[in-house]
Length: 305
Image (cartoon, rainbow, N blue to C red; front, side, top):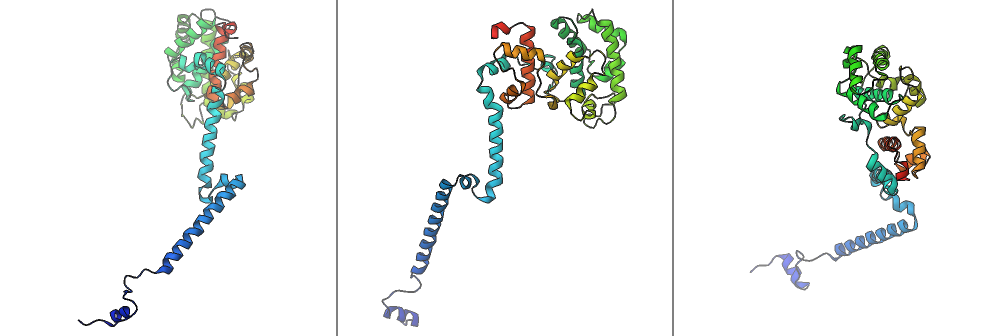
């Protein structure tokens, strides 16, 4: 059988065909690259151990994502860890920290809707009067059930109708005066807080525009709230207590009477410290204010001290 020149040459060199020969140089080169990569990895690990900054940053293309994840983790720890670290604070929030709007059976109680803000103002007006807190709260519930936290409904109501609703709640001592003040409130909201309601576009007026008018400044908010007849300093303190979960610019706030309660039951008497303990969460601060108010009004200070 005839052989090709290549086959003859291969036979004369020992019988190995070049077609099946394995290039040793390629294998050696691959092994060398692997060793280089191993050395590089080991060097990076050593640098990471020697330099914490290098270990923290890692590859440059992953740095942004890693930092974002770290920020989220840190925020979660700030929000949750301080509360769990203080069993008494956690217990008080669990037992008494119900938001006012939750008590009034209002859906989405931490949303700054026109109805929610008006409901908080109505509560501040009624509960700041010299009347038992049970009757005041009952009367607020009657106003909410009558839909008077809707500015359009309140606008259509007559003085006699408002007086009757207040009477049903037991607010007899101040019913005539308060019925008049509710009418004045409608006029104020319509005169000053109708235009520019970008978020909710309430034709009848939106007290969220008071927040805009005040540029979210608590002192200015306090000044403008004083224009509401029937709402004095105590009433504004009540509004700040209950509205900070909705208007977060009001946080942190605890009214002076509730701050004394906090001290009597063994919590911090420093608003900023309690604020940090709650992870600077406005809704949790609102719950704490509600809890302290309930403890004070229900005379549970000795029981919890």
